[in-house]
Image 1 (cartoon, rainbow, N blue to C red):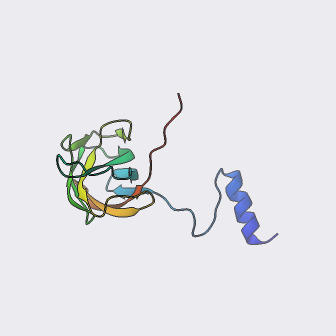
Image 2: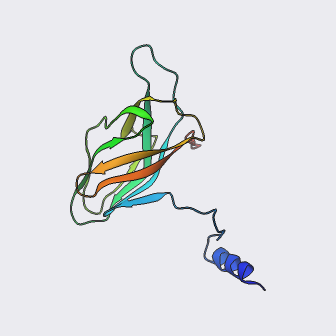
Length: 148
């Protein structure tokens, strides 16, 4: 038995498959904060009432530290502006917050250029009060609808 099958067998026993160059983590650390799977749905059609707004969600954001952290801002080259519609996001120590598409959008891109299409990826810089700035890759994907 060669080394590769042994590694694949060991990975399968551990509940994962080890394939070099294929498996990547989609979680990013910023100090004590872990940002898990930033994603955005494809842009809706433009509204005559104002700028195109595209929401950005996070599967989860966790504060593993001992002090409160706040997400206070964000920016990207893909939009004229990034807003936090609900204001700064407060993360108490030890908190894990879900910010998925079944709730309010934690971030909104104003006038994304070009409009977001399924399969796109772009860099978004999140700015935290204590941890500073961190770049995350946002995946554009149609959210999965859960069956009742």
